[in-house]
Amino acid sequence: HHIFRVHETIPVAQAGPMTILYPQWLPGNHAANGPMKNIDGIVFRADGKVIPWMRDPVDVFAFHLDIPQGATTLDVDFDFLSAVAGNDGRIVMTPEMLSLQWINLAMYPAGHFARRIQIEPSVRFPEGWTHFSALETAGVEGGVTRFKPVDFDTLADSPMISGRYPRQIELDPGGPA
Image 1 (cartoon, rainbow, N blue to C red):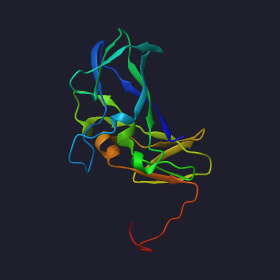
Image 2: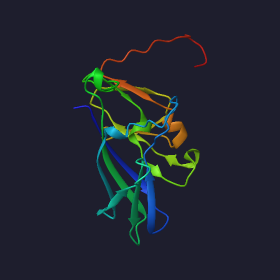
Image 3: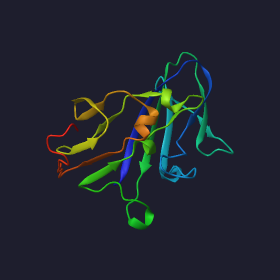
């Protein structure tokens, strides 16, 4: 259905106002054109309870919420609706392959340098699919592939290709890479 279902857990330092951002400046782009129009079903939770949020009236990439007392993590759930036809945008998912761009599938707390935000990414692929990425695999458990922690900048610049019919071609047989 061309839908990426995203779940994130963000550590929370204290109760009170918090701003969560969706990336607007993407690597290789020369304008603030993050695909916000493809985001749907945003839900924030702390301790299993839904937290009301408000979109910033000026910066549509910013979401404001109040973290309740005692919460140590914020759970973020949303869907990324990818293109289903070429005139809708770049096709990134078919029944045989996907091109996962982490930057489109992440939100993060405002007020931090992206290079200092550590992420422990994971993804569930259809059974029998193989993936290729610069990220290092930490393990596979219950059908979920986990990757070693990386900073947000590295994650944003580490797209992943996955598919049902992989083929790897050595460019330099016996070489160092």
